[in-house]
Image 1 (cartoon, rainbow, N blue to C red):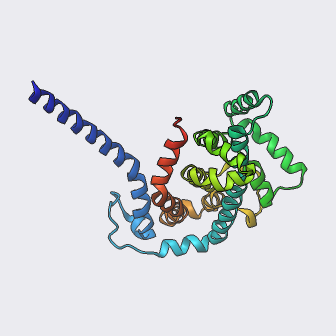
Image 2 (spheres, one colour):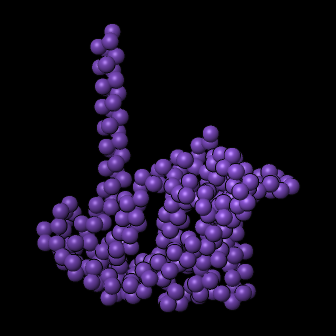
Length: 282
């Protein structure tokens, strides 16, 4: 009986690993195809009747073409400025709001927080028109302010931080108050160091979100000086360069994707621990 159970567990585990391996292959293969295509020359790519999984004569020419076809370096710099500035402002707003909901007592706090959470039910697409009209009326189109300001608040990140702050024992807060420590000083010296994994997680997720932004930058920027990498990829495609030279297009996509891949690989453990910590009470 025990042998049958052990055999059943091994078979189940085998099917589980086989399924996970198949799913991992399905997810990873497009990235692999993108990378190997970026190392194929234009001529060899077009001459392939059956696509090759390994480039026979790898070349870096496509990466040079990606930078020469469009100002990809400027797009990367613009995206870096947009991502860092938006994330920094969002962190200040979200941390202060989360701390207020988690620690400061005021009349109607629970009602306000419930109404605040209900905003998560509203699709982001519904407020794009309002944001666009506001930015246009304030004459902030084709500017970093127009790109940044609509993205500096997030109900989800405030909720995640608030739940994490609420896990810190009340005794620490009361002891700090007895010692005459103000709320801001307590937040900086006690709460943030304790909740550092979640803060790092929110920071990384926001940077990824900003880096992948597409719809809003396309709406408020039509000058190349303010294009982000998402605009750049579309510009390459619309110019005809990307349609004709697929390997160079893939090289541009690899360049744009690489910073996020490296960021996730470096901080993946902190992201997982931060999300788990933020979603667990007690």
